Amino acid sequence: MPGIRNPIQLSHIIGQVRRTTDRARQEAEEAVRKAAEWADSGKSSRAVDENIDYVDLTIHFIGGSGIPKMDVVGTADPYFVAKLDDSIKSTVKPNTLSPVWNEYWNVKNVPSNAKLSVEVLDKDDGTITDDYVGHAETDVTSGTKELTLQIDSGLRRERGTIWLKIDSVPATSARPSRFPYTFDGPIRYSRHYSPTVGVLTNLNDARLYSTWKMFLRGVPLFLGDSLQHWNTKYKAAQTIFQGPIIVRSSIQAGHRMLYARTTTNGFGLINGPEDVISILHGGSSSNGIGAHRVKPAVYTYVISADDNSFRFSETGAAFFVDFASKHALHANCATAVRYSGEFHPRPEGGWENFSDETPDSEIKWELVIDNNSGTYSPDPMALPDVKALFEYNFPWFKIHALDYNDPRLAQSRDACRNYALTKRGVRQEEFEPHANSGEVTLSHSATVTAGHGRNSSGGGSDIPPPLGASAYGAGDCYPRYAS
Image (tube, rainbow, N blue to C red; front, side, top):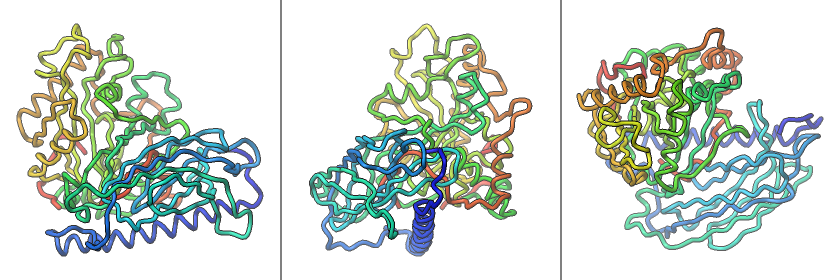
């Protein structure tokens, strides 16, 4: 947490060294994985031992005690990072030395000899890196586990205690080695705000400075190992991926700032349709109708290849101003994604047949998802798989998956925006990224940060990513919108 720094902050240095080493190792492993994938696209990219037993896990991260404060004044804002294959991160618990996380994670197809390692960090708002508290490791056998945090130095080796409980049962999948470490819920999300939102007071504007990150269940079960490579025929993508490095560095800096973990992030679970509906609520509007109604809005999304997270924001979000690609900003300038495009909610029958006289609770809601992304040009043949993925995660909604040039998509999207304009008092400029007069944009701040040579892999995420995960690039005139 913020405060007066200790004169000798060894934990900060040690934490940076550990994370830098981990990133280097993960990047090397990722390079090997992708090479294997391209060499043999017909096989799983994960090399696994078929003789190993596999288990399905429920991990309950209970809490901790005796967590030391890392600043001279105040207490701590601790969170954990847990790793089996990739990593998960907890919510930040502010101002406590005895955090209660009470977070559950279901992970399928885990090798029975896997090790679960847990690091605890102290969140420092306004800084690039957080203070490293300590780490612990355990096997994945069933039982309640009390783990002592340690630090790799000669000073103050014990750093408190954390508790967790693991339930382990034989894997139910017929071929668990095909998709090891498959995240199976609960679906978690976080809401983030652009750093420039602090100067705003209007909730409707605040929504245009927000982005969401959500972890869906079973992504590899539906999308397999397939990736959507950046579109080599799209000029904006060429500028990003083949142009000056400052372009990519600025996008990555913007991503870090936008998705930074802070004590003000919003966190939640998706347990039913009401949780999704609440995310889609439009905040206040000029006519006062939209405060607690589903907003007729179009969203830009990616499904990340890094952690299978579903990241989205309104297409008119202010933080997109001056960035070469909306989708690249969400994807941290990754050269490939699982999928990308746009989506919008609509009542059954479409917005053109809807009236605000009908309460949202009496409506059968639908989600229309597409592949409208010039940067990654997703394969339209994968749309049925994307549809099945969203039906699996959001069974309460009817899902429509349409190609970007399908006239039904244009009709539905236009009706959505027209309803926003004529019935909800949404302004025309909200449909596309815009900055208020005198506003310092995220792009400007990111360019300044990138220009100072900040490491593009720091900062980090917000909520726990799942424990495991693992091209098509065609069309030279893909979207009608910069994306």
